[in-house]
Image (cartoon, rainbow, N blue to C red):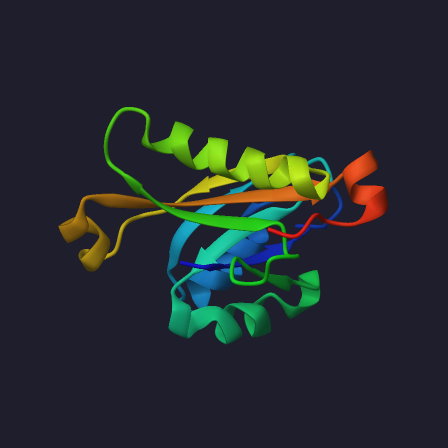
Length: 146
């Protein structure tokens, strides 16, 4: 669950139901969903099964979806396999905040996913933290090397 498909559920007015209906009718299941201000012009964040990314992109083409990948250090997406214990999410947030400080980013939204069988066996929950660049000294001079 290292990828997100992000789109603005624009209709008049914005409505989350139609894109989810499209995915349902296409038989596409999600591993997680999140976003911020999703019916106020914000983005819906979807975590499809890895093999379904292109199918989700195709199904939601009218919404001009985009993919963000946690493996791309400039994407703003952080992935954590969080131990199912008190403080697990906090540890992931601290890590993301530390990287954000160096890169002039702040957290936009958090997506908590549904563990697959392997993650259940390991006792972890997939978490995605999406951060955006803000005007700051760090963002104006460029990201500091990690």
